[in-house]
Image 1 (cartoon, rainbow, N blue to C red):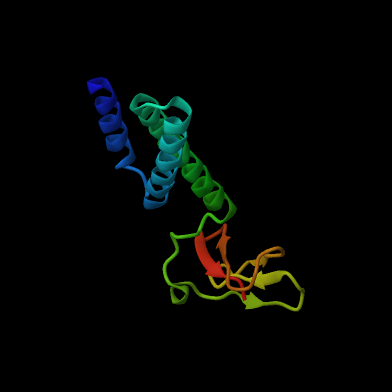
Image 2: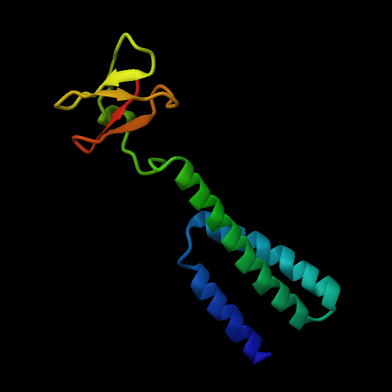
Length: 130
């Protein structure tokens, strides 16, 4: 029994360094795993094992979701307020804009929504798509 408390304490210490989303996933996974372990195993050892497995799985799934969101939008959660980036200038050609930064390159922004961030490769600065 002491060994189980040591495992639970170790798991709790590891999960304390997770993001809030990952901690929530771990809590929900731990509850579900503990309940399933208690029902399937019928004793406290099975419940603790189920809770530990569920917590790890829940935190892992939440971390994967965060990574997928970050890959889909690398500027999400890291960009300052909308007013901090200048807007590019529209051109006569749909999907092309003029960068607000010197040397004022014409850039292809097809596929980007209005208001989203784009990166000028010459200046390495971000701007908003009009």
